[in-house]
Image 1 (cartoon, rainbow, N blue to C red):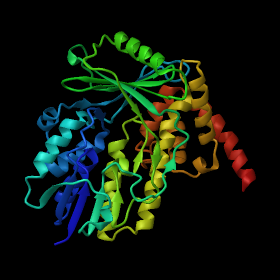
Image 2 (cartoon, rainbow, N blue to C red):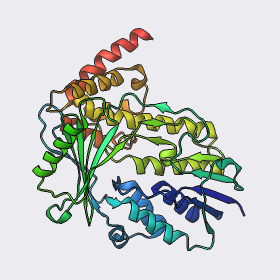
Image 3 (cartoon, helix red, strand yellow):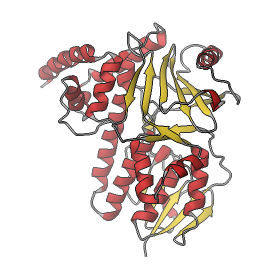
Image 4 (cartoon, rainbow, N blue to C red):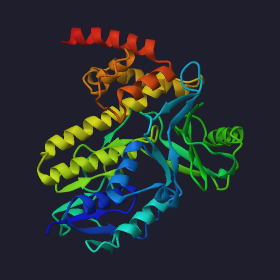
Length: 394
């Protein structure tokens, strides 16, 4: 019998162990480090992860409630674009995601899966996963620097810090994530059963952190929410690896991290696990899986940058910089060659026959957001100009 080693008991490690247990006959060695605390954050998903839990582990809403989760029907956005009016990026009828407590999810899945006789849990701080006695290894430890493979630093995304505070849920009951533009970034609101996670994602390169804390406090007050925790500061880099699949595959934060706008992390994880399974079964060669994964990450970056291209109701140095970065990306030849470009073209002209997915979005998602962000004319002008430039380049 073959053996799969999974490293890490975070969200990525839990999904990797679940898929390995349900979709293979392999023995599973699940490595975790009990000295690493679980990050107390709230997370949102698209429809994909919840669908996987239903199919692979017979999840119902009872399990979602056990991990402090709530129903998510889409994302509500405000202050983006010139008008700043609130609009909804909704999931299709019958499709739902979830908001969930990451720590409770991880504990729930670890307890649930470790009871299976094919799963052996091992408490260890691993230095070199390649030395493990396993046929395939899935590294979900978050240590993206482990094998000295250089990361691609993502420079088009303008944010690199989050201020996060937990609030009392008794006065807020919504089935949507909120993503509202702010003077130096944007704020998220994730409604869980027992708390509301509120965060201000911004750039530490603009202004003072104390000013951002005041803006976050004002935002929380406007929503009539009441903090129940201290404000936590999280600095982060936006990056991805170019070589993620082989005998050792890298997923979760070991593979990539992009800012949390549109909750793409768990969907990208599910796509990566699918590629890992194809490599393991011989359906994909490693090079194809790696190239395809990088293309999808770049598509996600483009989807994120679509929001910054629209600007916001705030005229600040941050937003001027963010729009400049997004315009540079959307005017590039590389973007015209990407999978995002034809989907956005279909969305601009109302063509729903294009059923592809790029950057975790369908044509209908692009249509909703282009309209809500007020970007139709702007995109048409950019594409007309960049298309003419591309023809000269040819």
